Length: 272
Image (cartoon, rainbow, N blue to C red; front, side):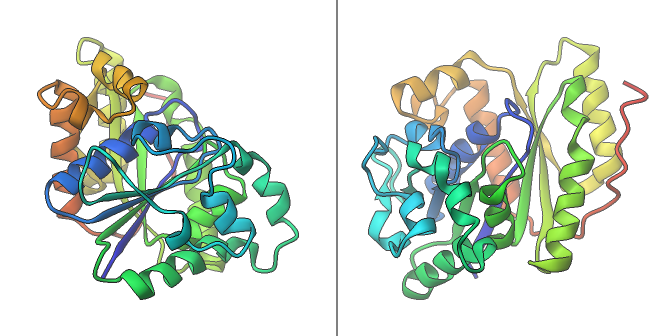
């Protein structure tokens, strides 16, 4: 079956989009057929994957608010064979307001993906959904459409704040809208091994989530920041860089694991 993984964290700047695009590229390079759906109005995932998303380009906005299908708007990633992208344009910024009036607004994305999979089941192995840094209707659509949640957490003090709220939202989505949703994996990002704080945050997260935390941590890297300005992921921009190596390792581990039941959402920063 096609795996559908939502990458979400309502806190901005945690490496969510960076993780989405680089894991997608790494998975595609390892032979998986990957579809990335950009749900963030900023369109950063579309930029990093080198696809057109200027104003007027049809993308996920048209899929969510009109009769367009994913097949109508999907684009191939020019640098990575086996990777396709549904872009986000600035029009998506108004989608949450427009979706309020839609029937079954929480299921718009789920139904679009199901329709696409029905005609392309043998062409897509993994769908990655890059959500905006909020818990609005766009992220809710991503959580309802997915079976797994990939949660990037930066190795800094404030990273744990708000995490319990997100996991409570996941619990509510599971209870009322999508019983199959599980926390699939936790990815530690922006790790600076020179600081004691980074190690403490990593230990705290591993204590609470155990085996759900990927073994690989993503280091702070200038190359990771540079790559999107060239319309590339770090996987193609600098394959030998520490960031690229780490994301390939994380992607390999993610590919080998499935969703497991969520554990305690009672996270504390008292010891950090």
